Length: 466
Image (cartoon, rainbow, N blue to C red):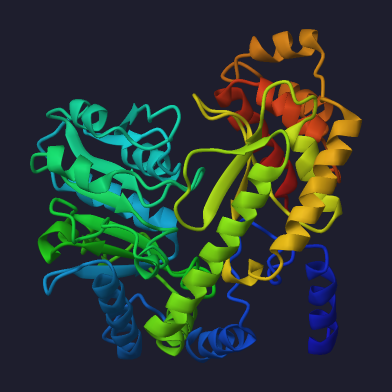
């Protein structure tokens, strides 16, 4: 195939994706609304994509850019002259490395654990799973969804290698009381997950939450979120080099080169690093302050509009650019239907299932590109709520709910899972149907472990060698 034909086919494939620009996809993507930022990032990515971050002595340009980004992040997040950092592929890798470094710093602990609020990102559960660490989940305040400092401190014991808090939490956009938690810890490592808020909260004057809080030992911040850099780039900062040392890996136990890794990856393309380096230098503090204000103003206006709609309410008190809303009891309409209706009107809002005191809700990640389109969003949201009222609640057969609730995912066979997926509307390799309300209602009735397994089986059906 010619290059022209291949690119034409790629454009056709991309036409079926959610839009990444224009502020209509309120999850997964972060849009500054500045076309020159995207062009600069793409050009810088192309210049360095063939360079390999595995060996900084072979590609010193990447070393320089990584140190520059870590230094910029450290200054933004209250770092000192001793603060050090590593650039990773994203927030999940940064969080996992924080868990790994904490575990390996305490080799004498035979059954290490991490203490985290139940609203902490699932990346910490992934890190704990990969690295053999126990998770000690601590319930949050049932109304504010913020971590409770006294409860967090009470969960710490001799096996605790890391305590985690969020700035803010993804699900509800609320900021955990980080100074209050830190004040109750006695020398235990304390990681602040600022992956989604670290590049916006400082410009909004919100905090403190970083190294300016005594006791914070590491902070993660994603540059492909509110630094508006191409994916995937995150920075993991440690208060000093000694805390970072156990994050590194080395092996001379083979006949090849001595393997040295600063992150979970070995080969790393220089493209994302160079793109982030270019975008951060271009926008600067003044540019980021404007973008943060625009995103926050849009979030405030959208929140006010949601709260003015009969039957909807915002969860907690979101302080920055994320928010989640649910339906009041007895409203007679289904939240997942609202999401379907918004999708038909060109907006993607992210469904979130109920968990502990958090009811089923719709999540919004508001970016600078949403400034100016708040009225259009709220108009379509009101129309979507109206359509959902007309449709009425989604009702799952009680017998089906009872049957699903009694299933044990550990004992079901792949064939049985295939039958369940088909019954849920997730069967086949053709992808998801256009409307998801009925499927989400059935998934919501499934216990968490069963829902996990069903969706993993569904992913397995999607990803095949074609």
